[in-house]
Length: 193
Image 1: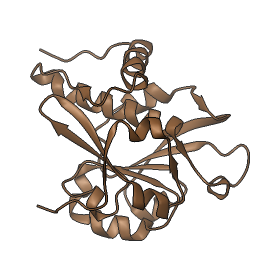
Image 2: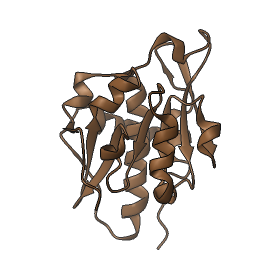
Image 3: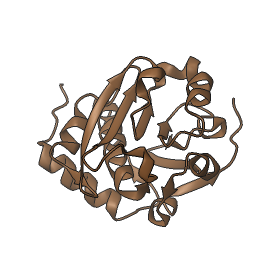
Image 4: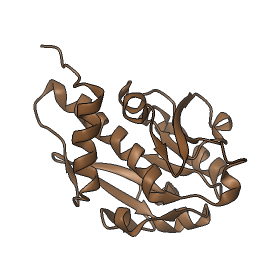
């Protein structure tokens, strides 16, 4: 049976309520085929919310009209969810845009960079290239936050949790709201398995 996507407004509204309520974790529906789609819908909603709970230094925006750019590096498991969620959204008087890239060198104008699981073999090189840049790096691969990734999505059972490497965020001169930090496990190193 095909998985049907809910209308954009319903997805944004429902996910926004969940995320903005700042639960310690967000449940992933456990209904077989729809699980993966809904898991990535939630991750897309988190990426949107990160734009609201992270502050970038002034020099991260060349001018007052520069949008907040959310980028996906590698294969896009989010599908159209992120595009739908951020359509016509504005955060701190900046519109939001989504870009997709195949090479990390193309992503230097990003503000939030989601590193797709397809890039697992290259995570160390990606994070080394972006080291000390004001780009919020987000991923879900094992050891991501221990390798200087700033936020890692961790799926534990039916919940999506966050691990935040605050040292990496500070090195990039990013300020993460205490509201978001309350959602997360703060790590400085994570063993690579």
